[in-house]
Picture 1 (cartoon, rainbow, N blue to C red):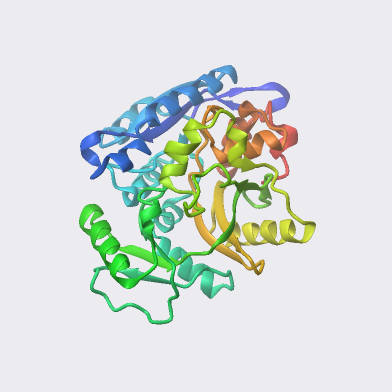
Picture 2: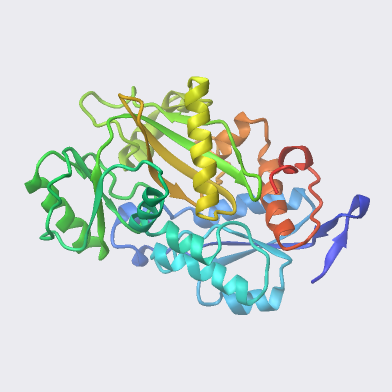
Length: 364
C-alpha cells in the first residue's frame, strides 16, 4: 500500500475511494424510496472535492457488481463507505464491508455485522431491550393476519423493518384502531416484500444524537426536531412529508430544529450517556445517528439508529450529522478528515489529521 509521507512523520493516503449507492429507479418498488437515495452520486462528488482540498486523490465507485474488480485495479489506500442499498435492498448494504474486508482495504463506518444489524430494526430493539435500554412496546409482523399482541396500546405506528430514510413514515403510518393497522401492514408487506415493525407511538419531543469516535466516542450537540411549522392536526413525527415536503418549503430551515436542543443538564447527560452506551453495545464505528422520543412523563425511548448517518454538506437541506458538527465548531472538511482518520487509525495507518487534530484526536 503506497502512502505518501506527510509532515512530522505522519502518513497521508494518496488515494481514497468513495463508494456510493448505485441508484436506478427500477431497483425501488416506489417513487418514495427512490427519492430518498437518488442523489447518492452527487453527494459522493461533493465529498470528493473536500478530499481534493486535503491533497488526496478521490476515486468514485458505484456500489454494484463491478466494485471488486475496480478496487483491485485502483488499490485505494482507504475507502469512505456511503452505500445505503445495493440493487435497492438496504439489507444487502452489508456486502460492501464484506468486499472491503476480503480485499483488506481500510474503510469508514460499520463492519458487516453492524450494517446487518442496522437493517433489522426488530433485532436492534431486542438487543437494546435486553440490555436495559427503554424502547416502545413493539411487535414484528410477517403478515397482516398475524396475531396482534393485546398489550399494545393505540396509537400504533407501522415501520418497514429493513428500510431507513423515513420511507412510508407518513401521517397514514399511525393507526388508531385495528382495522386501519391491518390495512396498513398489508399494504407495506405487499409493496416492499419485508416484515413490518409495529410499535406504540410515543407522543412527545424528538431528538437526534450524532456520535463520533471509536474507543472513546463523543456526542455532538443534540438536535431537537421542531413540529410547530406543520399544518394543524398533523401528527408530530419526523415523517417523509416533513423532510421532503414541508421542510423544503421553509424559508428558514432553522424553524425545523433546535441545535443545540434546549435541555436540562440532567436530561442532556441522560441522552448522551444512553447514546454512548448504545454506540458501544452495538460495536458501532466512526459515526452514527440515534433517534429518541421523550414522552410527557420524561421517559426517554430509543427509536432508531443509523450507522450511515448521512453526511451531505448541503446547507440548503437538513442533514443532522453535519449540522451537529457545525454547531460543535467543526468545518465540513474537519468532519470528513476526522472520520477518515478514525478509520485509518483502526487499521494502524498513522493518518495525518491535518485539519482535525484538535477535534478528533481523543476519539480513538
